[in-house]
View 1: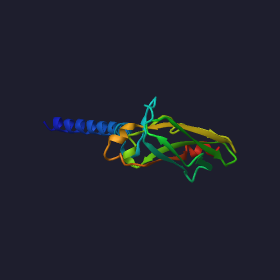
View 2: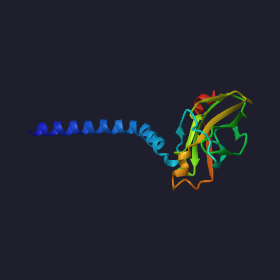
View 3: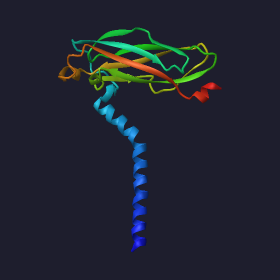
View 4: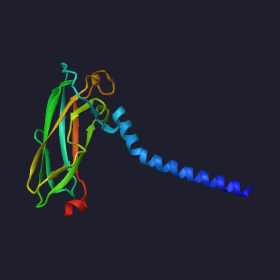
Length: 179
């Protein structure tokens, strides 16, 4: 009787550990999916085609940042653009490797205000794609996007006049970049 109880307790403990490990691995993709569906924390949407412009204009500001461990200069070619809601637009960012060795970086993004995230749709983006720049090399990177006209019907977002698209570049692997 005591052996059965000990075996059952051990089995439940192992199952609990397996479940928690699986949950830990699944949490990042599940959170990313949740953010993409809801636009939580300024997470943008992905699209293939812009629906077409409306009469309403909205300003999009572009912000560029670089992690201090990455010796790059990174900036938008234009700090802002005014576009028709629903119209396809393109912005360019440039990155320059200021070091004397090849370095790989990757960019993350965010949109503010956060309630605009579910309406800001990117068709093409350089984010989360590794970019390797040789010493002194400059790369020009496009972002193709639109602001979904559904933003005009959302009472929490309809009065938004300016959306900021912000990117931050980080080194991919400091050990790989040090060689």
